[in-house]
Image (cartoon, rainbow, N blue to C red; front, side):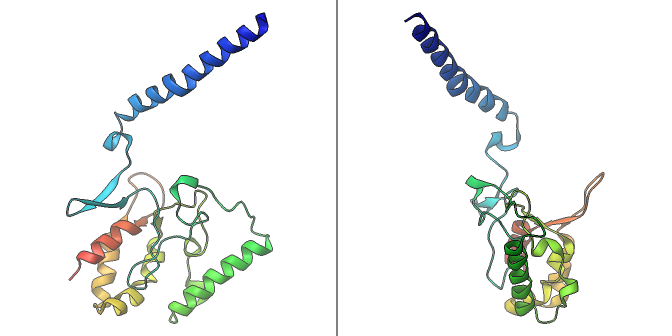
Length: 184
């Protein structure tokens, strides 16, 4: 009986610690983060249209496409595919993505496709693509929107984010597509 009361006390203490105190502490710390820990949203005309740090699905031909997602852009289940580069199923999936890109972009050669356009990131929710990944799509997007290619290319170049210290340049797909919608 003595052991049961000790276990009940430990259980109650653990519940209070991990179900009340810990979440409140994390919530308190989040209040010092940008947007109070609610994520960095992007708004157009006062309406939130997406999160800047979470990849979103763009599959219409008049938009720039983002990086493939291993979790179908479900932010509740961030994950990679966990399949190695020698896995036959993974290689078939990458080849299917390459074939799709070549079909929609007939002016491209396979060697011109950047790897980030056919492979998912470790989180499956990468909001960015390489500048080359955006530039290979300029011709398609310009044609679909009946815009001058040079204008769309300039838009891509204006949306390249260069790291201040180290790293590779990226293009945030949501921000680029919002800017594209505002392009006349």
